[in-house]
Image 1: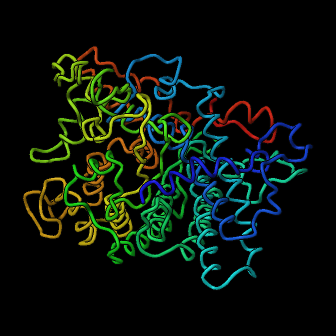
Image 2 (image 1 turned 180 degrees about the vertical axis):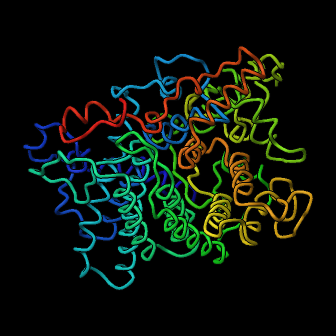
Image 3 (image 1 turned 90 degrees about the vertical axis):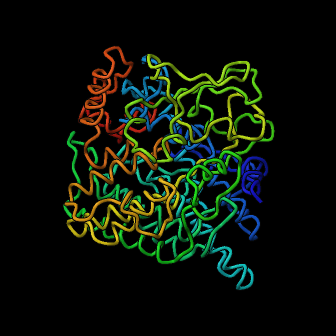
Length: 543
């Protein structure tokens, strides 16, 4: 049932979750000397499978939050990039986060830091307690407990990977917080963070269930797909403390991990592309899990439509809709560009799904933007017209955030094959061409010279084709800026985009190329509050 995880996360769990015991481990110094207060005593709680399940669901709750994947990590932090931006050139509020004008006092990054670490500490508790239940129950119950342990390991790794993507090197804490702990931990390098993430996710895979899950909980194959993504980030470029973008000398070892995991997912036959690109996003917008293509998604739900529990998918990143219509209102803060729309080839069905060139006025009339206002083009994947249920709240939705879908696995396989073999092989072509064929409405497993990439491409040419394909297929899904970053082309891509847009129209409102500072804006600043409380933390470069 679609609402199973949603219901428990947003109702039952919040009644029993730890507060201080599971708090952000950079809590105030006064809190370090006091006995933790909580709704229940963690030492006495892990007595049954049901209690272990509730504690595990509490880990999931940390990503069902506007501070993390309900808004900031899924929408705000991806912008600005080469295909999208947050509208308006104001830099004094959330727009400044997107426009690369952000300080260590930002409430946005503080919220993300605290909420992700809250989830990590919840995971630490489950990882600590479930092995102590080894004598509990029968074989089936112990297998269930193993699953919860696998979920906790995966989610701890996932949250650390999210933090590393935002902040680079981090304090790494792997035990639950207890009274008297010294929580003023120094940063470890981003390489050490990714090593722990890979260890956690690898350890989780053997414990997680085979096949698909339809309750928004992580499965074995989904964990393998996320491990592949993490490996590509670990083997990619990242900003180091000395202010330089570097990749590990053994970066191909990480591409090998990505290749292994994506190959195993494809060969398992568990997942497949929805034959219709449009239908996938209709399903998502209509609160239907697509069990074939959707591999890992974050559950959002609130009975009244307000927070906590709701997200901004389909509200911020959708075409503008005026209040008073049957559709409900959208703020439509995320905008794409006419140049990105024009980059789709003729016949690519993804263009009309992904890019909306209109707004809906208060009478429900669809109004196309004139050429002089094409800077208002918006993401179309989660448009209000797809959302058949009337909105419970004009500012939020119950649309899940899909973290990983099978199309991304195919594109990661193509990228890894190209890198490992110093050029594309048949497997690389097959993976990317299946994505392309679906985009053009073709049969997925039948070669089609009209849409397939041409044979004989060099490594560089294939990579450039892949870079474009990831934009056309995965646009606005929270990945683009970070793809450009791990390829070490973020700054140059922003500057090239700004130059192209100013050439297209000299007053085009886009400033990311000017505002972005290489050697700084590849990371966000560590929140000032955390540095004030933990003098062992070192600020990120150039903040």
